[in-house]
Length: 250
Image 1 (cartoon, rainbow, N blue to C red):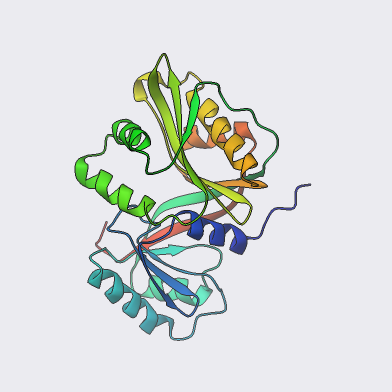
Image 2: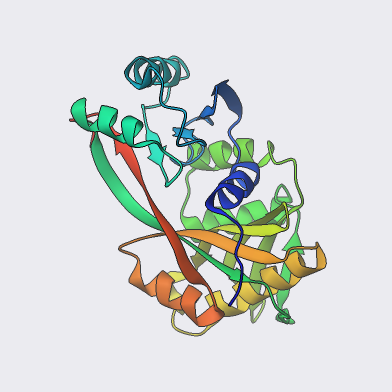
């Protein structure tokens, strides 16, 4: 049986692979802001379940910090969040949204598709493909680009083409021997052709060359199609997490 890294190891790798632009630590609670691009990079989360002292005051402080940085208050609660933090959010009426899973696998030998490209995440070609496939407007694209500029670990934009046309892409980053995958997207007119699988395998081949031993990603609990794809590649469920927002904010 595979001995996977701990929840803490996966979360630290995820933090490095999808950082905030502005970061502030309150003991083991990290606050991140990135212009509102993705909840993960614009949220507060706890990395130590034993760090619960003054949870009520610290939730208020974190919320004020996020508002000052022009983002909505959001907590990302993983198995590392203390019961006291969860109880504080419950008592204050914070809602739970977007239940999600972390999937992971040991990274074996994988072969890249001959029509896949590995580009720098700020390469104009990758950015143009990502903008088109994700249907981003200029504001969303600028926010994404600002976050990518904060990457400080090996990373790549993976682009898969067919007949000269980009049809799938993702972002991969390697931290502490774990490759984290995000922004997986396929041309909606070309789905069910194995394109996402080929693109993922190509990115994992790059990560293997970069020294990754494990692969991990986040997937929403209601995205059954994505979960089926990831399971077919060898990923398995490791743990769950949710986002919390103030009551009435949904």
